[in-house]
Length: 148
Length: 82
Image (cartoon, rainbow over the protein chains, first blue to last red):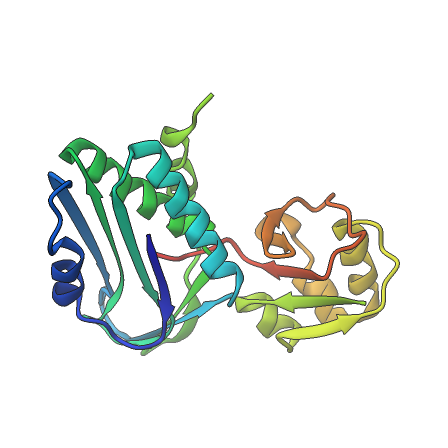
């Protein structure tokens, strides 16, 4: 399990390659990259976070994904600070014996870190700056993972 | 003494990222009331608690969470990571 919270850019391809290299036990590796999307007029985005709690929350979420889906390994890299459209904000990678678990674990990680890891996005465009509001859909996305 | 942290628009509205507070408030909700009574900028930030989330010692918590022995409380809007 590898969790990194950083301001610096990272190379998604190189990270995915390094994660996959030399594995003999994993039949499936799934990767996801989140990119800053320009919906029209976005100049840049600033991601604020809560140092300390962020790492803690990501470790908890990754440990839960590992337990539920029997992951052999997982990687989460999440950036903070100023980003421009086209830049990679974050990535997850999961390794499992079979693809169903690798895909499900990647979705689980994404659903949880969207609304349970302490990051906040502020968008800067031609009309000024605004904090991105959380969507109800982000919260209801967690319902499908509910367990008794 | 307790460290109180603010993030995103809560930080902007209150005008500082962190402060150390001497308080006897037994719960998060009582601390919110105490802060809101201080100045308008606090009252404005805490006007709608349904728009806020709270973490106690870096774990998400409820507003009725007790503060005994707590070192750090943080207030922020719903998170928007990913």
